[in-house]
Image 1 (cartoon, rainbow, N blue to C red):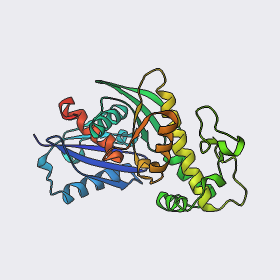
Image 2 (tube, rainbow, N blue to C red; image 1 turned 90 degrees about the vertical axis):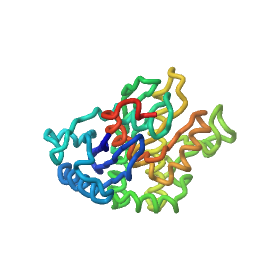
Image 3 (tube, helix red, strand yellow; image 1 turned 135 degrees about the horizontal axis):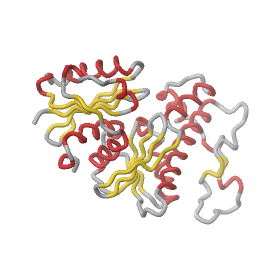
Length: 277
């Protein structure tokens, strides 16, 4: 069997992976300004970097919002489209090696997909994600460089912008420790330092996404949440989600290849369930 190529053509990035014999081959991500140029550029670079010829590729599977731009074979290869939410579920299931979970795809916005055995269903989503972070940072910090925002945030103090339970209560409330967030940005000032604002923005996005995920699981009994997408690369995830785990008695999991899970799922749509662990 040849290599199955999965390509996730998104709003801000295009991601490409190959899968052969159940193993992921050197994922690649490039910034997407034009979907056609980014896809062909990513594909060409991917083949070159990995010494893969067109003859080695058995199938190309496209997904993501930018996939709609392509209705002809990529480089003349057999090409098909895959449902993005199905790809989220298959890719996360492969990467996390779980059968029952809610997949939280943190891209420009956030989508929520339930995996329950062999069933994969789209629960919904929220319009808060990486696009929210970059848009508000553009307004408040005069930059939309996520790496710069994250570096600023590492020097910030969240108690300077968020109102905590300890600020409004002399003792912990039922189920809420003193360091739990009472209100996002309620303690901010007109002259708050950029570092505090950056941390506040990241916390706002990550906490909102996490809370939405937990609410989506009500009455399902699911306690495992697999986080995928570009926002999982933020180092602040390693600080914020462990606190939310304790608060809600759940588990947030960031698997290997978390930012490439949708592209992995696209390849698995062709390879079939036997390849997806």
